[in-house]
Length: 552
Image (cartoon, rainbow, N blue to C red; front, side, top):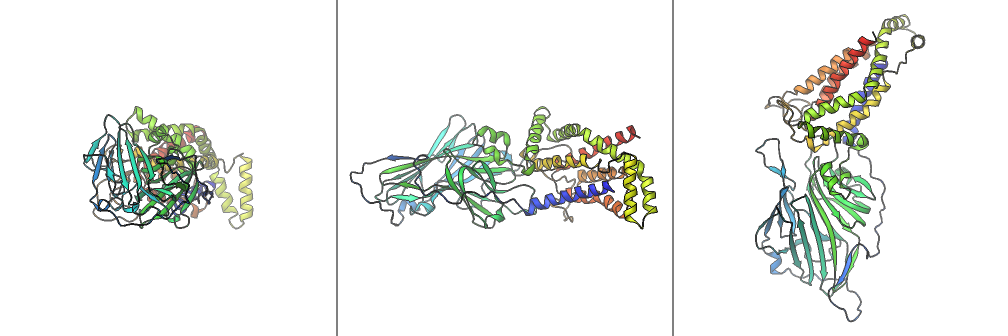
């Protein structure tokens, strides 16, 4: 009976975990809401570009003027090619319009196009510059001029810099200088605001990320905007943006991520700043890095330095970049277990270049570490199995007196020195390990399009043998035979048959139904996770058989 309760509890815990992960998210820690109103003189440099012979009252009212002919000309597209990506930058806003990763493809098909990080649904592009109070008229629609004569530049040997400049009608010069390297995904960005007008600029400078996140039927990992504020990772689900859209504190970076890829703004000199979130459309999210208010007097300029990262959510790559950007790869409450497992899986892959084999070896190593707990659990089950005839007799004898029946069963445990929960506790200890691996194997970009063998050519996708041209209930497309999942369900059924028989017929039926429930749950899970659970079941069956024979 205790074993039945345990397995029912595990099944419910599993379902609750998934439902909670999908429908709820922990609210971010309360952060400081009030932005400092003092001028930040330390984090930014104010440089005089002309002398002011008389001290005059500052005029902040820059007038709006008609756009010049230069501002409405057709913007040119500049293409930047590096070993890692191909980038299109439009002169309109000096914005990123396309960012194609050369080491990743859209689908598992080898002929599939390379992965595009900027959706065509985003007309304005991303990495846009602005002022929160619109204090510089014309900047929103500005067409910059570039210092390049050609329409493309290759960055394969030496680093390259491309400068974009725009001059407002009032004389304010805005420049965006991008620095590209052939050695990294990281892009340098220097923004300079030179105020050659007779008016003072006092406003919050903004740098924006815009990303399209398509709707999904279900998701088991975080997707959306995030930031590292006061050394704490803040992740905001899309549905929570309307509840709170501003987060203030010492900000190291602002990012928007999907399951496998990341776009991020990283200030070189982090300080007090704000992340402002907006839903531009149902599936389009904008995350603004809002610089603390600065004053740019006439005849002076301000310089702001950033790093931009557009690339994979790989712990190895992000760790080498620094800036604590690695913290964006987070596996939830079991991150402390999942991170070492991810490292170990990648370590194994460096010797055996097949992630399916690496998962199998990882499972074996985990079972080896947990072997004593498993042995203790199966030994307790074996002892309980020996008592089943006596327990059945007691239940039959006192079927109308539950209190006396339970008292005699407890006396039986005491007589034979058996702990009724002895088989439960060791198994409960293993539950966090499973959930950690569940999150890790779902989110690890290493498994994206990683083949195993035969029909399993993508460990990040559900296994499907053959392709059906019709929908299957409870199954997400593509439709086919989930062979690995069915085998996994069979091992669960066999494992269940090896458990001590249940005295309560109702509980016995529930227990026999659980393998079907788990098979349905796993039918849309990544094949890498199903492979882990299958191997875990097989080893558990062998261990249970060994223990039952040894302590017969």
